[in-house]
Amino acid sequence: MLSQYLFFFLSFVAVFSALMVIFEKNPVHSVLYLVITFFAIAGHFLILNAQFLFIVHIIVYAGAIMVLFLYIIMMLNLNKEVEPHKKNLPKLAAVLSAGGLMMCLVGLLQGADTGMLPSAQNNTVGLIENLGKLLFDKNGYMLPFEISSVLFLSAMVGAVFLTKRKPAVTE
Amino acid sequence: MKDVIIGVPVQWYIYLSVVLFCIGVMGVLFRRNAIIMFMCIELMLNAVNLLMVAFSRYHGDSGGQVFVFFIMVVAAAEVAVGLAILMMIYRNIKSTDIDLLNKLKW
Image (cartoon, rainbow over all chains, first blue to last red; front, side, top):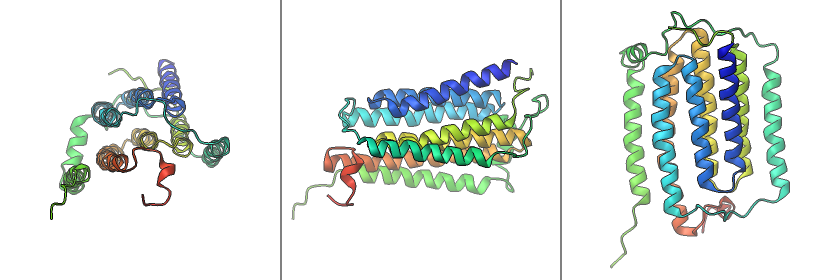
């Protein structure tokens, strides 16, 4: 029973603050609501016994990515409600198409073969030890892990290169 | 360790992910501010992450959680490059309104 209450509470928080991300006028408030959504999703990870992803999710999303967003908003001085709003017809179209997508996905799930989540007593798939063994195994995900480090390096170089001011042409 | 997840069907997680993903889609279509659209893309990625963790738990397979880890890596790289591009756009047109970018030139 407790887990069901926890599930509904975390889901309500996640969906509510996700909606507030969209409908909030001030971009800074949107970022803060998105942080709340990420914490709710991290809570879901915790009750699913994915402890490694819980920590990584908080550090990477709430700690790094959202700070990057806040930093950019601060640097571009966008913390005002200067956004000219769309007309009502594109807004209605957006709501209708997203609602239609949701109807399609929910309709597809009717009659799907599902069941209860298994008990956590001897469920250790989310612990750091098992994930590390799989991640650094030669036959596991060792190669994608190394490739992703190259991806990070190229992303860093690309970001620095893109935001560098071009020197004034003197010739 | 006390069992906390007993009594929750995997279907509830599927519905929650669908709702979060559709909110993300709606945000991308609804707003004109490019930063908010970026945040909605992050929201969609997170909905998929949540679903993958739920399925990984349902089948007792660690592979899904490793994939979630890689999705986080790619999302971080994507945000760094995307925000750098946004900075460049802001320097050129002094705005982050995507409706001003509809001709791919300025």
